[in-house]
Length: 359
Image (cartoon, one colour):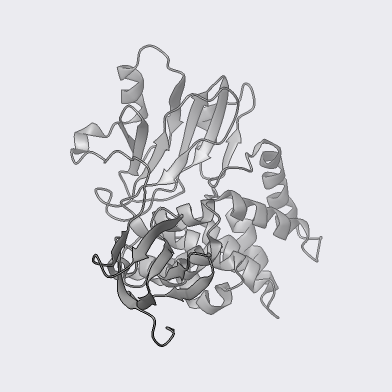
């Protein structure tokens, strides 16, 4: 809104993004020189504004709120471009032979390094660059992949957010190769080539939960029907659960569970929803117990399942007791700071014995 007699100019905003049809659906905000919000979140791109300084901002693919300042005046084009500041991430090789098994990696590195992959799921191969390991699956997925990593004298086992599309394309994850002086979360990220899932991950980590929820609301269907990425769809479902908006996506959640039974996080989220519905409690408990026998992807869904079973109204179920016992044995060693389920192996524990589905 402008005051009569004020000199005004038209501000044009350009968004560089792979989300929402190349950024067309990303919402921008405008504040004046006093940082007063004069334009709430909108997908509009042209604005008539009085001459002056303005702060333009939007949450982009890097998960953070990108902000720029521009002066609207009559002496120059009033145009501004917002683009994400994504951290460096090496590209995966297009050559299949560059992805190696863990035994091939060990053969290449005869001298032990500060951080190394001790073991990995049999259907996972690794492309090694100086700063990262890039991991992908090579066969049909039957369980959440696992990597056992040695770092700083500790041995960790981490779930990997690899997905189930064509293994040559956007299904990889990146693990940062860095030496940590103490036990801490392994830096595991969904590869940026999986733009929707990666953006959701980064928005959550940056605390931009409103933007993450808005993206997840559209992403769940997209990642189940258009770009097949079940681990990304599970992340969207988890975000919607935390926002108490998963009830609207029950058909998609059922589809996730039915089509990708190897991914127990969908079962856990479905069980949490069904447990609140009359006549669905037995089904919910069945799903929860089944999930406890599989390798879980997210730390938050592991915690959700643990609480669901711990506070179950009926305590006489043998299956419930066994499931709770399985989870309780792992819980003390879980790194609760990690997005993806990661726990320290106990001294003397065989890494090869823990890469099975129920580990």
